[in-house]
Amino acid sequence: MELQSKSLQTQARYFEALLRRYHKAEFLGADPLCVVHRFTNAADQEIAALLAALLAYGNVKQIIRSLNHLFALMEMHPAAFVECLDLRSVHKALKTFRHRFHDGQDIATLLWLFRQTQVEFGSLERAFLHFDSGEDYSGALGGLLNLWHSWLGRASRLRSMLGKPSFIHFMASPQRGSACKRWFLFLRWVVRPRDGIDLGLWHQADSSKLLFPVDRHILRIANNIGIVSARSATLKVARAITGFFRVLDAKDPVRFDFALCHLGILGDCPTTPDVGVCEACELAEICQLRTRLASQSKKEILSSLGSALREQECGRKRRAR
Image 1: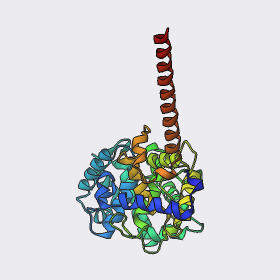
Image 2: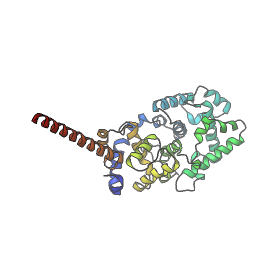
Image 3: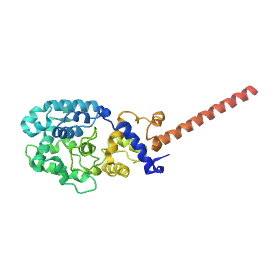
Image 4: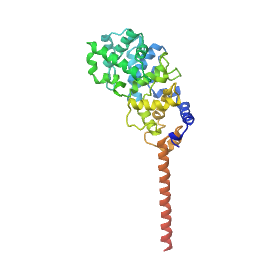
């Protein structure tokens, strides 16, 4: 039976079962967040989380290798590295860094913006919440990124970064309809309560205002289940997915993100549909794709059975002649 025909209580039961299976620290090895957990100091964790989230694109093994290299260049003390930040020395320290199309100059500029935010507001959290005015955190994120744009525009040594495609990749804004997957991933990590996975670093922020970080796994699974019907991730899609889970848990809708994402990452919801794999999934009873696959399988079985019966009948008639 499909999603729409299930009661709220029944839907919640299926997703809670998924949480019990996947929302576990043992699955952090397939997530860039595992690198952040190596730091024990909250200040180090915040900077590490920002860098890990904004570099979280591509193959997860490559992401983790890049993060290990980056933090080694920062001598495994990112907070101290930023506190003593001097652009010239930072550029030199990070000159060997490369993650796909990002380089050390991109990271140095990002860290300069982080440090400026600390100086102006006291913390990144305070700056972020200064711009909060809506029912979710898209407005706060847009306000923070606008502020960063203005700072870069006034900084003669950094103004050119506003025209550098790799750096602009960090600055995807919800005000332009972007799904902002990497930023919403960072926010999930630092805002949600510490639970062995998320970090709980921001104590004044509200988990109910978080939005789903919609990566390819979340988008595909949300389409499979029937939460959305969308080919690409946008802010509208992120809000629609979050809205569905907000009905299940108004105070903490994105707590389902890690489990749902790892259902895809670990191959338990394969890109190529497999009805046998689908049957073992906790969400099988509410997955529209699984319902279609099961229906197709039944038709194929009946068609094969019909063909076999026709062959038998033809053979009987030939023998009778």
